[in-house]
Image 1 (tube, helix red, strand yellow):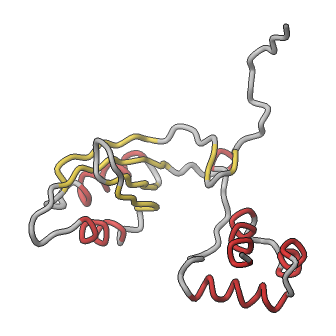
Image 2 (tube, helix red, strand yellow):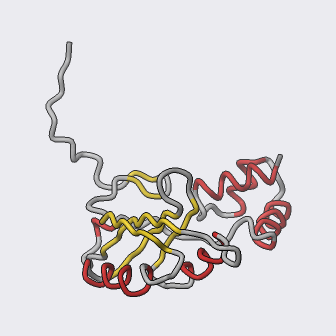
Image 3 (cartoon, one colour):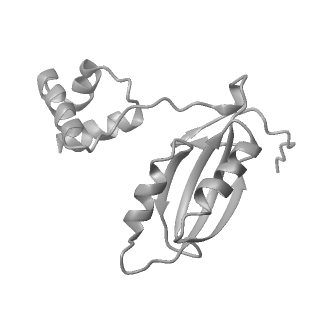
Length: 161
């Protein structure tokens, strides 16, 4: 299926030129352009982003994974809570998950104090939220399927038989 091939190539590298995708899939360039336009129009492709290695930046941003437990009532759904939380610019990702908690929320801020204040003053007071557990990200080794770092940080000695 050509749409699937185009989508996989965009996932691999969103900077591929239309000509490159056409060559790799055997499609004509106008067909590739039309497929990309259809994927964007249908909301399947929602945007294009760079994967940034935070360890290489001069500025330090604080990121945290926050577990949220909620209690629903007759008038409030998971979608209602998600809609409210997703509006905050500090929230970079929000997922309904299975397991010991209900939502997995990623948050970013200038400092631990800023992230903590956001959680305590904006998130925790939401009436349906019954518990928050915040995990600060110390180091990222892989983001969006891409390994980060130099790749030569392994200080362990090689052992050969």
